Length: 120
Image (cartoon, rainbow, N blue to C red; front, side):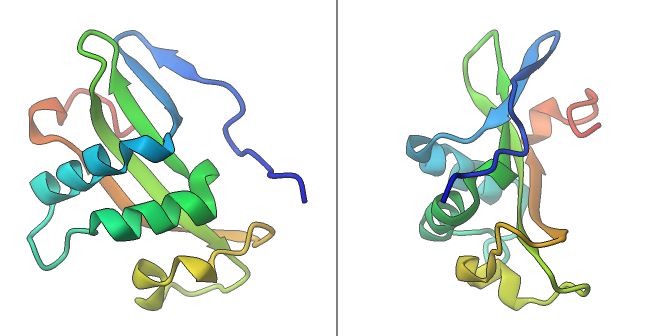
């Protein structure tokens, strides 16, 4: 089955690039989670890897072109369900590539990059 990409082209917003995450970037994403959420709420690197494996096309990262570092991301899964449920956070296998709805699971921007329009 051919993988459908929701984000076919990189977009450049002056200093930042928004693109799909690369598998090897799971550690960076986990560090951003830890910087943005309380320890009991932050997604583990293992869970981030599972989300990348199941739904990389719904895992977009912001990269600072000056430093080359990831500075934030948004990720989610698609589903035919109409209501969000907590199981989506821990069960990447609930992702349905043909689902009609997207459930946002995480949206993080490192504190030093917040209030610069990255989340727009």
